[in-house]
Image (cartoon, rainbow, N blue to C red; front, side, top):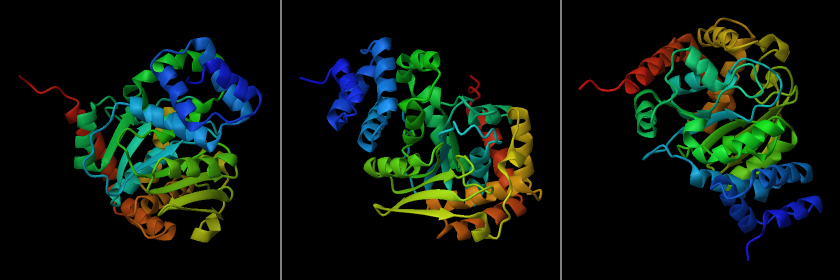
Length: 347
C-alpha cells in the first residue's frame, strides 16, 4: 500500500525521512493533479520545517524530470546549465545570464533553464526578453538554437506544465518550499554539467550530493558568503564540486584569481532595464566589477563544461572571449537566431 499524504505529513511532524519510492509516489500525485491543494501546501511546508533530505530532493527532482517537456539533444558534449536557485535577496544584475554568452563564445554549449523574476530585480527570462531574445521557442527549435549558436534558453513554464497543479499553492503560501530548489535540478535538455548558485550555505553540500544521485557528470555548486548565489567578488565562495563521481568541498577567494574584493552592492540593479545595461557593460569588457564577476563566473562555467582544465584556465579563456568581442557578438547572434527560428515560415 503506497504512503498517503497524511502519513507523509505525520513523518514530517515527527522529523522522520520519507523514503525514495514514497517520495516518487507523492510527487507523481502532485504532478498529475491527484493531490489536493491543501495537502500540497501541508506536505511542502512539512518538508521545509523538517528540512528536506538529499534523498527526498533527488526523488522529487526525478519526478519533475519525468513530467517535463524535453529538448531533444543527440550530443551533450560540453553542454551545461548555468543557473541559480534565486532567493538570495542580493538584487544583483543577471550575472549567470551574462556568463552564458561569455562561456558560449569560449567554446561551451549552454542549455540555460530559467524563468521570470521571483525574488530578484530581474529574472533571466526578463532580461533576455528585454534584449530581444525570443524566449518561447519549441523544444526542437531550442535544439537548433544550441546547434547554431551554442546557446539555448528554456523558459521554465513552457517545460513544466505539470507544475500548474502546485503553482497556485506556491503563490498563496508566498514562502520558499522544495520547489525553489527543484527547478535548477530539472534541465529539460539533460545537460550533464552544471554551475549552480544556491541561496544558503547548507545547500552547497546538499545540492551537489543530489546532483551526484541524479547522475550529473561535472557539477559545481557555489554560495558566496556575502549571500550571493554566484561565485562572489565580495567574499569567499563555498564550492561543492562533483567530478568523476567524487565530491570535493572547498572555498575560493577573489584574490586566488588576482582580483580585488568588491562589495556586491556595486552590482545591484532595480529592474531588467538596469540589469541589461550592466550585462552589456560586462560583455563589452568595460573595466569594473560587472566585467570581473562575469569573467569569473564564466570561467567557472567553462571548467564545469569541460572546456577549461581549471577555473584559472577558464577565467583566461573568458577574458579573451570578452576582449576579442566574441562574447558581445554571441549575444547578437543569439538574438538574431531565436527571432528567425520563432518566425513562422512563409507559405
